[in-house]
Length: 394
Ligand SMILES: Cc1ncc(COP(=O)(O)O)c(C=O)c1O
Image 1 (cartoon, rainbow, N blue to C red):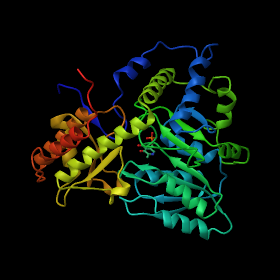
Image 2 (image 1 turned 90 degrees about the vertical axis):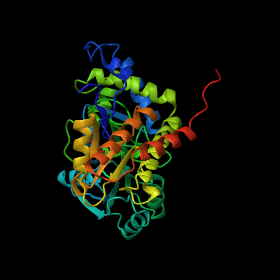
Image 3 (image 1 turned 90 degrees about the horizontal axis):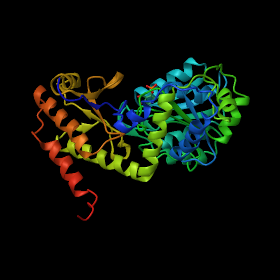
């Protein structure tokens, strides 16, 4: 099919040409004397993205799933109780992983389309008089449903209950796109992956540990080897890794961090909000509903769009892919077939995103969903025109 595939799954996201170029490097000696010149600034600059002065960052040659395990295995012991909320495919998978590595997971079911119920969290922690809950696991942005939870609120609930539990965050589809503050919210371990807001291929699990979480490695008895942060600490202090790193990905990360820091995190967050809001205007104009049940849950990185009764989202995606060369995100597990997702994160602007809206609109009309031709595209474009930054004087 002529033209490039329009990739609008919520990760992997489009890798900008400048990052592709930065990764196009000859292989090099990862034990060379000057290799730390690449590694040490990466570990320092990552802290800026996690918004921490006191945390310690780690780069594992892995994906977000390994990040979940790094967080848990380096801080906890088999049988330790952790508390979590299940409101989508990814929050479910983290719970599943925690169980499979031997933790005692207490989890609450939350309707898909909602996020962390803060009152409930506080009540559960209040009721834990003996402080058996060792950590609270929160999926900041549930990529499967397009729901963002209030992390400042989570911190407040933990404090209000005067509970010493560690606070762990899955920021795979939020960090580097949606405001995330390691220090201000006193998060203990946060993890992300390279293939979303960082605009890189998958292959790096990016983590940050608080000083408190870092100390826990001395008592944590969960089995670990490849994912042991102690080996990273030993090697990272001199600017190396305990095993062979993917050097092209590290060069890509260098460029990704430069781009993010040059744009400025606040501008990155504002851009994601504005692009997401355009998509939400389109969904409203189509007279469709988001999976997110209330504006307070709206995600600025992914919109999960419900198809009306009598239709399946699989047909919309099938036509989008085969007829228009557009990749939309599928509904996963409980919401499979009920929704499709538009990822709007990473290297993106209005005109790129219009292609996803136009393709989704055409595909929905093709399968018979009664959305008015041009309605969503027009609503988004008008919103983006009205909120556009002034152009430089000619
Ligand atoms: C919120 C969230 N957590 C974890 C993961 C798992 O990450 P990975 O596929 O990189 O292992 C994903 C993947 O999409 C995700 O969206």
